[in-house]
Image (tube, rainbow over all chains, first blue to last red; front, side, top):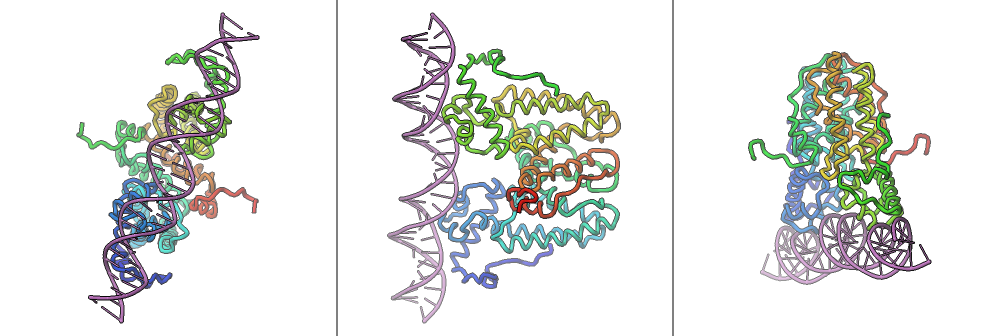
Length: 232
Length: 232
DNA sequence: CGCCATCTGGATGATCTATTCCGGTTGTTA
DNA sequence: TAACAACCGGAATAGATCATCCAGATGGCG
């Protein structure tokens, strides 16, 4: 982990917009809301009713609206920490000795983050003009990413026509895989990423992780919930 | 084109459920609805309000509901023809002399169909238990696909661990790319498919189509509409 | 031509979600 | 501890969409 402990209630008064420091109960509810939003977004995606999040947090809707006037504000608040982790992933990859390994590990790590969180899968490839902190983390990640890519190319492992935008493309594609398969065949994304790494490499085919069973893939087509293996 | 002229009003009475043959004006409205649904789904995706389709077709909502009781019925009606074209794409690929070329052309053709139609991009990886014809076309495509894959492997061009489910995975991924980029950077999917073909092949890297400009990709992130190049 | 089953379009009611309002409560400060 | 500002939650309002109903129009058949 690269990032230091971030954004406890203590440093709120140092924020740019000079928020007048919330009252204790208000700050407590704010945290509850962020926690609830994280959980609900992760499980059900970004389109859940606002009210469900409020109920899950145990507060009234008005409280939610007061703290996060728009949905985008709430999303930004909920994913700020994860966005920092995302940026950290690049930084961590940069310190690894082998540039190509670092690059591959990075792709897998980020895609795993998408697979583990329905909301994050989509939020990664969106932009929220209202959320300064949020976008700042994204930019931080981007600039390090350019360097990571440059190293991998210099090491002769990454194809020279690879561009940073290809990462975004990968994230969009992986979001498609994840949202379609999450319930019924939640490991397909690993195979997908392995394919993409293969495509990005200048070398010959490498072995792939096992594919999902046709049955599981069929369940994904039906958009059915994943029934635990063994349960009748 | 492989498929003969399909499904004019004439063969309706041969359908399994023995529809009692619609009155002339009813059939006319049915066609209008299907045409309207195609256009609206293609442009705005599958989640558009039912009423918008009725209005676009110039009929009342009741007429739409009477002919297509559920949204799935309407979707099936609207995409039946395109589903046939999808199945034809495999058949066409099978008659090409070079198995690997046939395989690659097939992937590009199908992904192009996704890129050209927002609704189709999503509908391809879904299942509609109510639509017999619809699913029949999908199955027809699937079985031919297995053969196409077998040939490409036998020709020594397609990696042997490739599975038919990987095609579905590709369609899911491409749907993600297409829905995220359609408005702002509508050609990214070409680059994506080229990468995937590279990954599926047993050979070394091939040149890629040009990438989208960073500006275009940024517009995609913002989910902004695509401003025609040249227009201020 | 005239009947009538079929069909039509808009009105209607139900459901769901977003957003605002307000009487009552609670934290903080002196 | 008293007083006030900030905060709270649920009710109320508003808008969108779905799905159904019904009085009237219309095509097809004898």
